[in-house]
Length: 393
Length: 122
Ligand code: SF4
Ligand code: SF4
Image (cartoon, rainbow over all chains, first blue to last red; front, side):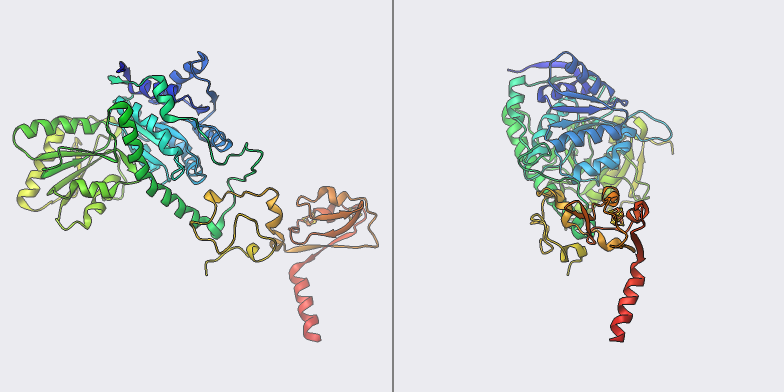
């Protein structure tokens, strides 16, 4: 039965968590994530879930307690944003290297300073090399759907890695959206009962976790994490197909929008992809061959799918909502450009850093990007690799 | 050859880990599936000073046994027996707490040099 509701992105995430009914949630409030754990804690106090809710004194402890719970054998979650994720940083590496299938929404927000509470992806990009699977959500519907799928992806025996579910702070987290939620039973059956293969509370089969590794085997264990990331690509697609069967909504590694015959493409994560799609619709009416590629997964980086989707285009603009200060543009630019480097078609790839600290991406901005791309195709040259969109210049 | 800790070449090896394992064979996340396995990890080679027992002075009070942080004093039948030099890291606590000064600490370097000198003499 279709069940449409009008809720915010944060409510959608909390709703998904309610239906997943994890064993343990340890969390600390931080804007703009606060609502997620606040709403979820009311589910706990109302007895709508039987989750053990651990109120901790910081995000470092939130991730630590989640790691402890997960290692003990529980299906465990936390949630965070911005500075909170930065404070968790050390423990995020522990979670991924211990191969714990922790799911944690990250409501994207700029990292200070200057102090800022609004959306950009500098928090998420800070853990892009931490061995965590990163799903990105265009809107509240995707936030809800990705949360549910994240559990299955994380717990798959070939994967066993933490999964972070990213949604744009305030833009997605606080705006009211109409979305479809599944009924409790369907979600319950989809996520299933968590049966960890090995866990600390298994008295019959003692196990030591978090061992000292030094140069003996540290390298080998990192290689295992890479293999898990590699395996995750297939698992993400499989889980996406299964999810489509119960929801009717399609999920893969990327979302290719009108790219089949496109000459120009914009690559962009999260909510800005929605704006870009709107612009594409308008430009298509004018006869321009334009498209949007929205990576749903940023880690593991789905470079094969991206190569495949972009191999026919002539010029690509990668929109990054984060800086790297490398002076060579944003983090996604580097990855997309590398992915396209070996294609023979000589695709021009340029970068636009946009929306830092919550600055709006206006439709005119996206139009300008397509304008620039058209120019690049016409002249055969891209004068500047790195551009700033919506900046006072 | 891939470098690995000297420990793998010494004491008993754990069931979980062997030095010839490649990344696909090694246990996930370095998990160890054997209880009490710290015993097989020999920390004695960290030692720079070594406790040496003076049999004649010892009154077998076993205060040293209680204080040793590495459980490296072996007592048999309620009496001081020996040091477990594979795990004794040479902190000197035992020598410090012994009420009758029956434990002396010697430099490992010095002992090595003496041994060397003795070998050269022969
Ligand atoms: S503390 Fe000294 S006297 Fe007592 S058992 Fe140990 S070595 Fe012997
Ligand atoms: S030196 Fe330290 S570790 Fe060694 S036996 Fe004495 S107390 Fe134990």
